[in-house]
Amino acid sequence: MDINKTIEILEALASGCSPTTGEMIENESILNERDVIRALQIAIDKLKTNKLKTISDVKIDETDIKSVIELFKEEEQNPTSNKLVGFFLGTRKFQSETFVSNQLYGKYRNLYQKGQLLDFFTRYLAENNLTNRNNEKNDPYKKIDFFQKETFNRLSEKAINQLKEKVDELGILKTENLSEYVQNARINHPRAYESWTDTEKELLSKAIEYTNDLDLLSDCFQRGKSSIESCGQKLIYESQNL
Image (cartoon, rainbow, N blue to C red; front, side):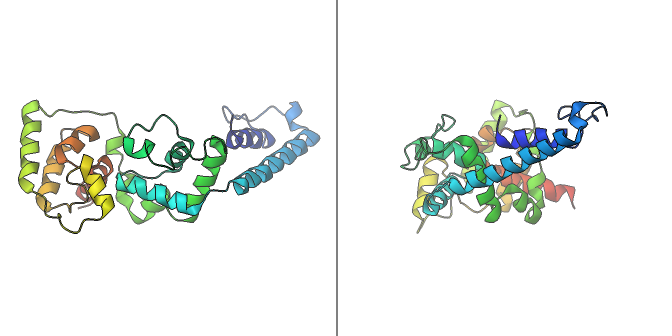
């Protein structure tokens, strides 16, 4: 059990509630005795203090953090605190050679535990306005959960091939003076960082009437999944707020 969950349980008990159901604890329970409540509060305060110390004990070069955040963006992925923790600890959830071959992958595996890094990166992202919550305030379309719902696909094989042909017909306009990270991104996604035209948006708008499968859409549109998700969210949001 991590420290956050422990604090949550103790706070519920100190307030006279069951941490599981939220129901009030019977008055005659030992948990309602004054000394017990004080002891619980002292334990909570101590844990919170230790938590802050734990965060301050984490020393990660900010250059490393910024480099990895940029790497996620190059791969058109959102650098969440959980993903940063997994990357720096070198967890198995990363399959892409781009990530696992990076010199920073797993760099802090033997220095910190998952809980320490999770607290650290949660605070780091919040302090630097990089959290999803901050993004949602500025970009309300990010609340659209269409692509988080159960995956479905009603596109026939013929329709998928037709969609791919339509996307191929669009061509690629941005081909000169490409930065290194754009060139790297286009190895796997040929249309990465290409501006979305009205025609391409229309194709996506029609496609998401039949599927929310990001893997399939990524293959059809030759773009990273996060790019498609973001554009799709905007299209849905705009259609709902005409």
